Image 1 (cartoon, rainbow over the protein chains, first blue to last red):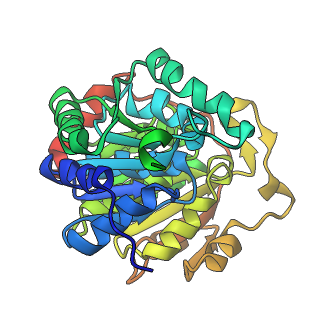
Image 2: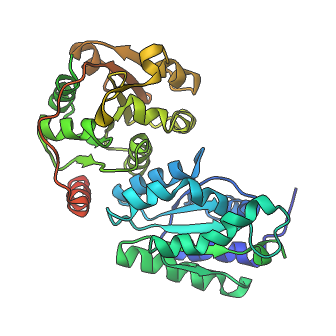
Length: 171
Length: 180
């Protein structure tokens, strides 16, 4: 299947790569498949590490950072719920920087009501655990927002999140 | 062999390996057996020691990484075995200090007490070099191979004698500086 890469997806890849991210731990998600595919096709120096669960991806990313890398974790918002302990007892207290890219479910345009409670909770949860976050609302700004978030993360020694709303990823 | 004796044997034999310890008793024993800059002590994130070790092993293929996990901890993150089996990092050794107890939380039995076989689980996830050991010599002999190593060390519980400092950022910075 040959799908055109959406501008937002190529922007996420370009922004992450520009910030020095060469390692991405992820759990698959439909919109993220555009990002992962773009990395595979056009970024030979980027290593994609498949995890079985989002919490595990954060553990792997923490280890990558301890080993001197600049990691990213990419996940669906539902998986943020699986990740809170990893974030609050490892990533945050040890000050381990990483870019977190969250593909949203349960926000505007969601068809499955089982996804909406977590979708509506994503921003309050990130605020509660003090992880700064920004949303990509159009393809043209994706690269800049991602590069800025990753750059701030590695400069400050703390994680930062980029949210990809369904309005963006399903348009 | 007690967990502390097993930990001491690993520290004595591991050279300049990086060691990641699961929270609670495994980390306390690592600190007691020999505090060293290449030790990374977790104080939370139960279950993730093998994932952290995997990340370090991927980032630094020239460094041998040893994970000191617990049976209860690994049972929280069995998917990690599938990921290690998928990626086959040659420089990663996962040692499960299997006392068949949640010792840190008061000694409740884990499923390994009634026969759950973590080494068989690892083999089923394509970590071929997965064994159960009961002596320090067997344990040391399994620390390094040409593929990822998975060692279930059947250990007796021993009361911890020391704890690492609650200096999370200091632990991290010292560890990263030691890896260079």
